[in-house]
Image 1 (cartoon, rainbow, N blue to C red):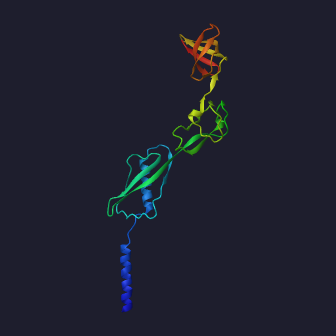
Image 2 (cartoon, helix red, strand yellow):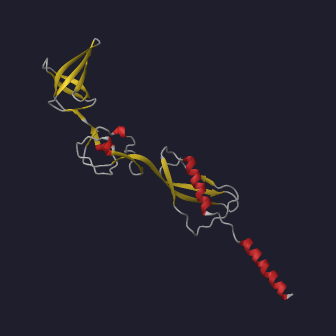
Image 3 (cartoon, helix red, strand yellow):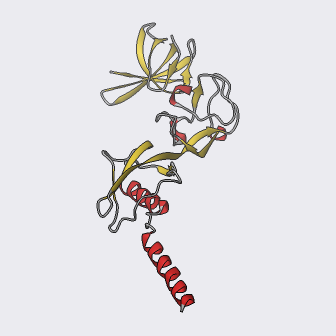
Length: 230
């Protein structure tokens, strides 16, 4: 009888102890709720990765009997964001989860060195998936933006090309002979001229008309070719 009473008492204590143990909200469930929220509310069109700052191991939050409320003050952008997570039922609680959204894009990178003044060709370029957080939008994602332009400085292999690294190539140099094209009354007239300055595509330069000896303004349209409006 004494043994039966002892066993019953131990069982009773175990049952009560199990009921006394609180049920904690798993950190994993909180992380998943935050990731889902970010995926649905992020303000970016580029590929991205999410990194969460882990919650402290000792942080025990009562299990929420209803779905947790997850929100931010504004749309989520690339960079660091504080996400609010709340439980509004039972033993209510609220925390912040720090999230880092890292944007990635395929950007134009040099596959070989470039010397100052060298013309950029397809052989110089490649697209590489890159973390663009620190590039502030100055990077390039298309070869067309840089092909056939000239490097403003010496650049090493692996350099991510920025808009400030190059200029339009000089199609005409001062003193070169050029063809001047003019259209008058639907008739195209061609004349010989001498460039009085360097010029890139679309740039207006001074050109000396060899027939009239006059200095005129002409627009660079290609290598050795300029046009004037009549």
